[in-house]
Image (cartoon, rainbow over all chains, first blue to last red; front, side, top):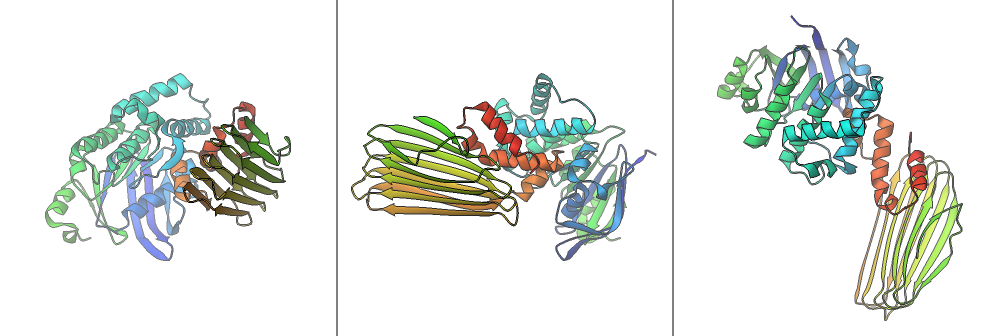
Length: 250
Length: 200
């Protein structure tokens, strides 16, 4: 079996006074794609927020180890430098900052953290062009302000574009497939499949089985009321499709 | 006339008079470490006169910056625009007072004023006092004033992409100031402003 990339033990987390995660255990090995499914309010987005270090989400108990390190001791930017990436359920608009400047800052900060020189402008532009073509974005996209005035589908494409630029070791997709048409869904699926390798892993948080037809998960978890109540293979997706989450018990 | 005044380095005239068809593009810059009282009165005296005023003030320690704009539309058919942006941190205080006066016969006046402020600390103060005094009836006037903070969601989004917190804060401040920065032709001055926003 491959080396463990992420190990979550007895994770409890709250937002404000409300406890959302109530003892999550999860092990992801390198090369694996895991799906996390569950009804609204089960704690799926809280899990992605805690993994990426979002302020206001407080871990009250438990531990997370990522690539051999104590993840909870790392800042959000350190987690990114270590290869973690979250495709946001609701991508944030940043008025006044162009996609080009945003990505240049992100790429060069990561290179600096790794002790590398800044990417040369020509190399950076080449990379931008290549990844924009990959997600089907045209030239003017690079000049637009980050997510400002983007349609829902464009925002999700932009998330996949950023993921392709940053080539994460652990990609977390938080309901990236929600509300997408067939073409955009294909971009998401191609984006994740392009990253698949024996070293890299992904967590796909979703309500639907559609995306999981093109990005076939190795392991499927069902999260309900802050706990993982079932873990198994892809057959679980079919059971959920037939019986709903009511049909899944621990 | 087009002029950028750096407070503490350049003397700012207290009074400008614009005759028919004259145009003044005025930009005020208050760098960190500079306290100043700046009263500017602009008299629009002839039809077609146009004022395009903007400014930025960076009060990040214990500065006191007071800007008082007094824009007087004495005759009709003139235009004035004002855009002032401030970043206030530490224990600094900024005070923006902007009066638009439109005389009784100054019809077809267009006058706009905006003042926006970003607070970086709990002890910082940004006061904003827009004033309209309008005695004509055929005018287009608007004013907007805000005091806010850096957006936490934007900061987290940038940090989650690996942009360090200090750089993410600076990017937000630069984007906030960008409409005023774009008016400054002196690249060395722009670079000085950008440097002063690092690690805030």
